[in-house]
Length: 250
Ligand SMILES: NC(=O)c1ccc[n+]([C@@H]2O[C@H](COP(=O)([O-])OP(=O)(O)OC[C@H]3O[C@@H](n4cnc5c(N)ncnc54)[C@H](O)[C@@H]3O)[C@@H](O)[C@H]2O)c1
Picture 1 (cartoon, rainbow, N blue to C red):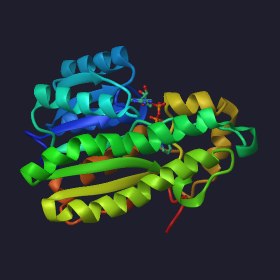
Picture 2 (cartoon, helix red, strand yellow):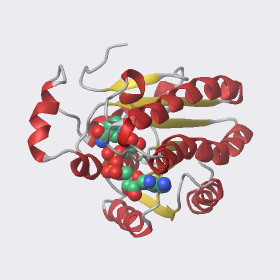
Picture 3 (cartoon, protein in one colour):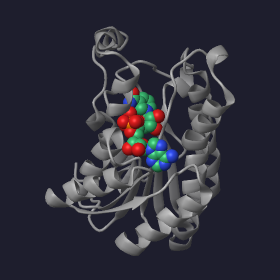
Picture 4 (cartoon, rainbow, N blue to C red):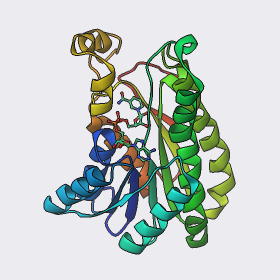
């Protein structure tokens, strides 16, 4: 299916590596002008260079999505480089794997700061322009942890669940203005982030928990996000689309 993203501009938070970079690659392949936005300035710059070397059009901006001013600056810089944003992908995320009783308020603040406030900040910065232009697509990356709750990631589960509720509500607010807002809820996908969290011997065991018999690949998430970012999903808003190997079937 041709997603017809040629001429569109798309900003991907956390785009320097992992799932975010796979999204940048696919959006660039589909013809979008891609802005890699990441707290890792050098990683974002290198990712944009890689996309450009592969024939895409890409730029990088650096900032912390959990900071409201940074979010505004990233959107302003992205629009100066790539033009008014048609697509915002809220992918940046962090998690800490430990029992809730062993966790502390500093990690709660980080998990809500990036996973939840990051989404609010970026939407707050990007939505006014999208509404003025009467079009836009926002896709936020949440987790099956936010739908079913996973032990040892209780606060992360809560922070990701908040994104689902926010998506539903804001989707209703902005639908009359021509903007669609959706989420993807991901199962376990092998990335630099999850490889740091789960030792190599755990991966076959994790894979067995999935009806499709494997953990996910970043490209699995990218395909769903590209569809939701495109006009091919023009009658889809407020939804949480599971990309999860069959892990949950709500
Ligand atoms: N990998 C999985 O199994 C999985 C499952 C469910 C949901 N998710 C979600 O998918 C998203 C991507 O996960 P990943 O596995 O690719 O992670 P990752 O750790 O490999 O990459 C995350 C990227 O986000 C950037 N980032 C972190 N904090 C940031 C901030 N404050 N501001 C801007 N950028 C920031 C990092 O620098 C990095 O480039 C996250 O939202 C994560 O919660 C991942």
